[in-house]
Length: 193
Image 1 (cartoon, rainbow, N blue to C red):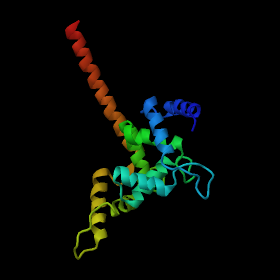
Image 2 (cartoon, one colour):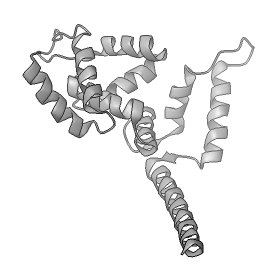
Image 3 (spheres, one colour):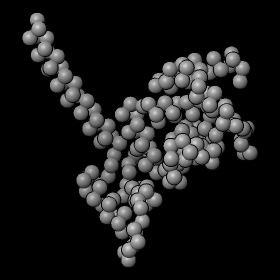
Image 4 (cartoon, helix red, strand yellow):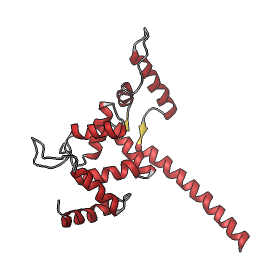
């Protein structure tokens, strides 16, 4: 990529990848280009295919669960073309590495919401936990322990985890903090003035 194209792409991505500065965006573009990214057999699009992306997740972040890695890939691959472009790479890393709490919560929710219906059901939770827990050698069915964990979690979380509920709870928390902070500021202002 020539210098002029790099500069234009960097400036464009600085607007959408809000959590990185210009230098960091440029470094991420160069890193992407050094990953030996080539057009895939099925597409003429230059980008990271699923296997290359999964390898990066494994080597860089120590991820080993196939289902989680596939879901993270789908979170980056916004246009669903089975390839992560340089734009998807930089924008995805912006949230993955430096996103706000709400952005990271939304991203994690999308990873765990296997059928993209806006809910995390018992079955989805079971599938995500199945490969995450260490298997203990015992006589009982290993899936029973996972089912028990899912039931305990859901009882505590009220049956179905809903992104809207999570977002509302987070907004209420922020409002309470803002109200408390406003009172503190007013109190300080009164004592000073």
